Image (cartoon, rainbow, N blue to C red; front, side, top):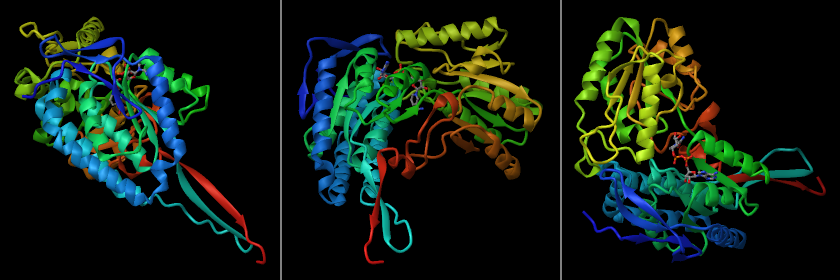
Length: 481
Ligand code: NAD
């Protein structure tokens, strides 16, 4: 347990600064106020943009040899590891997630900096043969100022996911933290600035999305937008970004399906269901929110999944239960509303479906719907809570059709012992990432991103670095050849 400051600040142009107005941050486990944070204004956002612009234009991040950026990033990783325990406590209290998962977020954040440190001195262009009389090559320039808008579900690791490659490539950054869970990110940035980056390279502001977020993404001072969040916000940002033709990376929502064939390894599947839909109280963009089960094993799997859900421990994040609270009262109400609509449409509620009324915080009962039809709201809309829709299927063809039958396409999963069947499905699934026999296989090294309304652009892995640079071609006329 660590003491949590009662008031937190924004980081702008090298200083921690207050604002006239404050936002309240609550503990979802107790529904009580935890702390306040300075509520950034449009003027604060403008100062942060100016600082980042100045830093980017000064070339300070790129003037030295790339080895300098490697050392900055490695030092940052060390500093993050040093605050992992304290940061985990803050994140667990403000967000509701388990203390172990909160600590994992900080360690993952450190890993992003280590990973992209390994690339910061290998951003190499190509040489293009044009025959005699010409030399031609490409270089990768940083984009300049990267505006990064972060959601509340994994604020620390998602922040590091975009910040590390942005700095590796030499960009200056303005980050907007989420109103509901901004404190862990303050701990993160406090650690990062100890590495001694040039002034203005990193700015962190917490403010209202529609005011401060919208200001950032509409600004002509921004060269790139990285957004992780909901589809409607992503669409609004894209409209704003269009005015200045700002390139964007969009990591949006999902309604991802796991397909379990009759030959599935039952134990492996159930472990994946537990992690896939109940980890972080189901508030994961790539959650396994649909489970498609072949008819022969349907009854057996439904029963096992219901037993699993009913056997989960539910409690405060600090006690590391299986299921933690959701982030807010509004989030809980939204989940309950969607569950009621599912029942009205004829989905059979096998367990849960409502808030946990014995606990003071925002707890949702682990919920399983069975006999779900592919066109029901519970099979089409993102719930962002611990709610699983189980859908029967008869053939491989039908399973693919159902899995691909939403507007989203973030991840998908195939569970079978038949490698050829798995590979056939992998080819046909419309998703940015496909898991075979383990949900959430992969890691910071594997490219991640969506298809359709799940967004575009890729984060993680080597590929992500190239979202933070632009290619410049240099074509030279060589006289005398
Ligand atoms: P949200 O869209 O409500 O908010 C995300 C961020 O955008 C917040 O910081 C918010 O303040 C800001 N924002 C809101 N309106 C804005 C505007 N008009 N202009 C600029 N910024 C604005 O999302 P959320 O509720 O914080 O997060 C949940 C959603 O995020 C889910 O849909 C989930 O699937 C998605 N998500 C996606 C990924 C991914 O990598 N694909 C990861 C995590 C969460």
